[in-house]
Length: 137
Image 1 (spheres, one colour):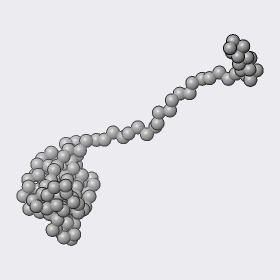
Image 2 (cartoon, rainbow, N blue to C red; image 1 turned 180 degrees about the vertical axis):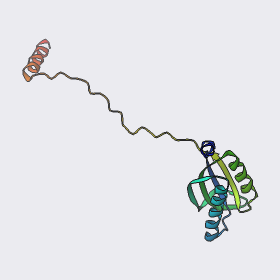
Image 3 (cartoon, rainbow, N blue to C red; image 1 turned 90 degrees about the horizontal axis):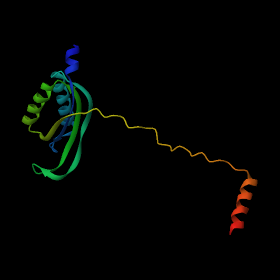
Image 4 (cartoon, rainbow, N blue to C red; image 1 turned 60 degrees about the vertical axis):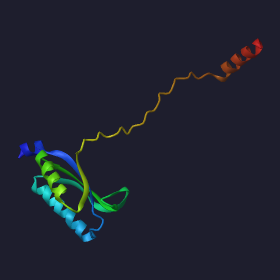
């Protein structure tokens, strides 16, 4: 069991689906994809339901598509099989499977410059120095 966990990679599948798919069919498509990934010994980390978006340029004549994504952990061979399945699915207009990288957390503490030490002078000393300066003028 430990060997399969060690060999799992982190992936993200992002895809554009045909805009003519109904809401009910979108839910079923997501469920099917998640089950397929699970059947390839994958683990779903995060799933984002497809949302209707407008594209900057048409894909297969469509300016509106359903965009969704799934983050998952799986063996490398599973990504190859998933790639084959996505290529043969006619409702998928475009997709990409990328290997996710671990993101290091940003530093949260802010830089606070050190305060310079300023000697405090007594009012009498300040007045004396001012008189000396004024006398020189």
